[in-house]
Amino acid sequence: MTEQTLNRAQRLLKLLDLKQIEENLYQGLNETENGSRLFGGQVLAQATMAAYRTVEDVHVHSLHAYFLRAGNVSRPVLYEVERIRDGRSFTTRRVVAIQNGLAIFNMDISFQGDEIGLDHSSPMPNVPLPDELRSDRDVALSLGGPKADPRLSPMAKIERPFEIRSVFELGTDAWGDNRFWNPAWIRFLEPLGTDVAGDCTKNDFQHQLMSRCLLAYASDMGLVSTANLPHQSEVDRSQLQMASLDHSIWIHRPVPMDQWLLFHKRTSTAQASRGMVHADFFAVDGTLVASVTQEGLIRLTK
Image (cartoon, rainbow, N blue to C red; front, side, top):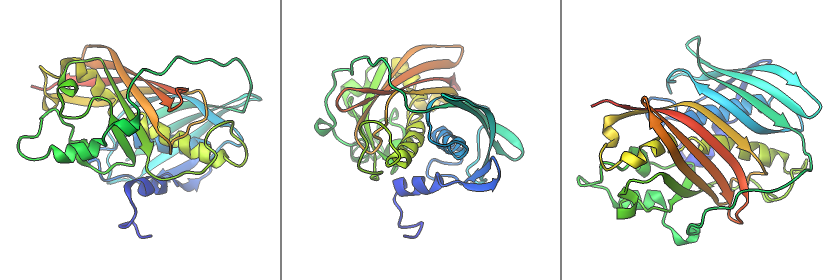
């Protein structure tokens, strides 16, 4: 296939195939569909992939990142990996993303081999299943025209690597209400393999590697804007400057990224032009797969 015939999900997979420049140094190209600024999820996913290139037989279980400067889609991103520690149980890396000679992002990331231990998780919220909901993009396209709701994100109509089905359907009264949570089902739009449940093995290692990088990407979708939900009846999106500041992910179990996951986002507080957002990823069977926390810039500009 040519670049023009690839769908958005296929293009993202291609962008995650980083070019090795030197030992511990990798180059990533950028998505162009999100405007002139780099999408933080892309940087998270590529940085995770760069770290994966320096480890063997272990999977990422947590990462903690800071977004330092706005990136530019017109220039490739260099990812420099520092090998902090190779332990018997845990392996640690540090990744710095660089553009124009300046760090735009840094991340500490930890990997772990397979282990067996205690097992429990919080229950999934009681929400409609994905088959009961409509695609966000289909709904957004139907809401087009000069009278489109100004609270609707400009990203809602753009093709994305993931299908998204919001529990609060776009444009409805419930969607427009002030609230603290925003659950949505998401699914990567390309198949990644067959054995996506159960423990990771040699056969599904690459599947899990890619799934965890894609989860890093998805974890930044619509996250900072969740901090505006309690105020959306009083503050329009156009009045806000929003950007990710820091971002943490904990992956608890194997990630079925090409199956439906409930992305349950909620905000706990906002002050000093910063908003705190938390999220959990649940599999359809209710199992907690991963947890996310982010503080974002949410600054009034008018």
